[in-house]
Image (cartoon, rainbow, N blue to C red; front, top):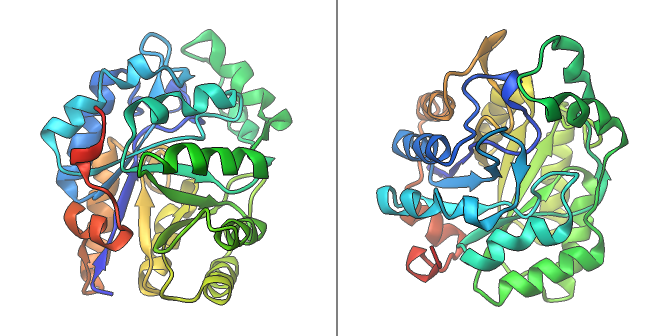
Length: 308
């Protein structure tokens, strides 16, 4: 495959403002960094929202409405709205923006899991906002709920709008959960699998796990039924993406997944990470897919059928 889809996950719901000054928080920051990432080569923009005054994760559609139209006006990139939100967010809040704006893509987490990032608190002594410390420290008690009923509800609710999904698989069992929904006819090819490594509570960041996840997906679905991508948390980001590209996969970068650009060096923006992975894949003889090419590969409805 000569064209590689680059997804950029711009802000997420786990990292907090104290952890990096580059993490976009306000609608203007999110829009500006998303547009710059698209200009750098990202075909898909995976988006969360935050409370502008504090940076806390939010599912409020009115906040999404302050940056989604700007991004659509200034770039042709595919907009992918989270349905994960954060591990502390109720399902109604997680789905509110996607139901209102009917995007081309949404993320869809394919199983319940422990989702923890509390070790990050050990490196921080002073916090910018009151909510941050408790949010991070208490993640040793978070269960990220994605039951079979939840997944079916999201597929049925958003599928009626023509939305397709980034099926986020944090462990091997999540591939089997996806196979269950394929068998039920709720997921149809070509579907997009995002294999996720290095989250505490999910599959570990070992290259052997990447090989096994990919071979398992091939066995369950057949190689022609799906497109696949890889993200890895923290310092594992670029080594894993390089391996995925060597194997013929797509890649995801962004400050949601890693705050760094190199060992011990914070990234200055999402675009900086996009630029780095573009250099890597071009050195392999590949090119970043354009948004139009990504839409064709993933059978998306087009940005003329969204509601923002």
